[in-house]
Length: 175
Image (tube, rainbow, N blue to C red):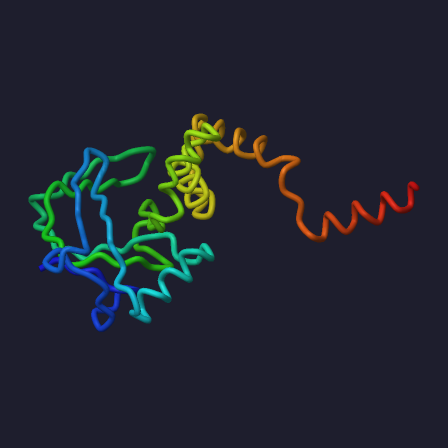
């Protein structure tokens, strides 16, 4: 049975495929998952809080693999292991994933389709850009363009209280 655990800790179960709140999908670029966090569960509530604050952004995956199911290549002087088949045991949203290419995001942060249409920005991609930047990964030209559009959209529309106070003080001095 494939389970979801908080913080890679088997004593903190938050879902499973059998329970129906963990769904897995094998895609050409890797494994994706959706996890409906249980309501009223302190471990799940903690994960939401940490994800909202940007502390959790990765996923650790517990799996076993037969060495015959691993293909080794070299890329840019680095050894790359491509796992062709694995026996998955659990998935865990974590602070420090073993593989920094993984991500974990709250669906509520990335699925506001009306806003995507209204502003013309792919919010799912924008969220991934933030995760990649936080991890020091390379941002593609396409991703940079999405970030530029988001910055232009926000420029002039958001004023922090501190900036607003400073602007008020300056305007009083000029009057």
